[in-house]
Length: 310
Image (tube, rainbow, N blue to C red; front, side, top):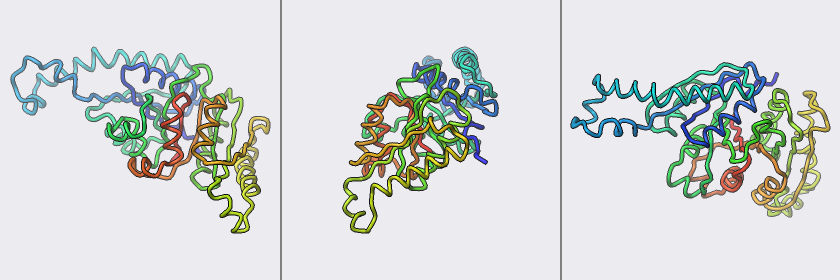
């Protein structure tokens, strides 16, 4: 039995247009998934304290436990946070989200707190907005999405793209595969989506034959073309075994450097969701080694990229 990856979803938000886009994505994707439990998480980073305490001459450490601080915090939550969380909840429901919705407000560094909550409360999937940022810049600045992506190696992480169809955010899905257990996790995730999400027009399974390894494989007595065909057939069979219509699944093979070929396919194929399995790495090793998933994340901003680690 295939386990639904959306039974427990964490959706970190703030008051930005990016977060609103992520909320609309989650609502549309999970439309009709009645078993889904979604938590809207807002992390207070501390800026509100300085805003409200400009004229107070006490040290912040002494005030934190005082009634003054508590009143400031409660007022900030009631007047500044709860209204937009209520709006997001309405947006989810208007998009057709049929599961339960909870609200959670925490305090601290947003990236670290999202990782902490995800692990502590056993969320399966985290969906968060992303904004275009180069790989090195994201690494050095410690962007929220970078911290979450590299801090949650046992969770599914959705980085919601800049171009989201509110009606159908997963109509065209790309799943790159290489035969590894990690890419097969992406296949299984895509299969879950195919079973619970309506309105999918196409799921493309792509196998890139690595040109730099082509001759080596031939010397080993392996035909790279036949090997690619076997990998694609194995992935395709998983969908057919679960009753997914044959016309929904297509397979593609290309020869070249995987990073370049996958990025090219994404840009030319008009996909709105890319699902990739990735072996857990640190942010620095991903940058140095130039992992395929890292390249896709940092070069393809329009589609949503789902990194599957379960």
